[in-house]
Length: 102
Image 1 (cartoon, rainbow, N blue to C red):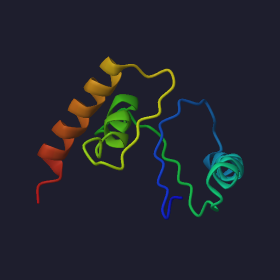
Image 2 (image 1 turned 120 degrees about the vertical axis):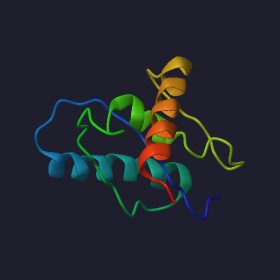
Image 3 (image 1 turned 45 degrees about the horizontal axis):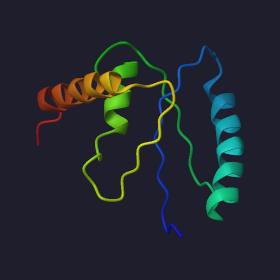
């Protein structure tokens, strides 16, 4: 059983009310998580894509894949292919290299 479940996803939607989207996502995903993992969902956050920085569809796909080399990481994707993942990871790495210098 999981002690901590962290899901990240990118979803293309045409919606104007992010507050309502968060509510619906938390309800629906919460039901799924509770059923599959006997856990409750604590947080849901939505961000609107801006086509700037890495807040693009591809950039967010790359962000979601940032821990791909970790042993606990599991890829589950729908309507996203390997090429989109590669492009997204490159966008994220390039953004991180130019703006998130430590």
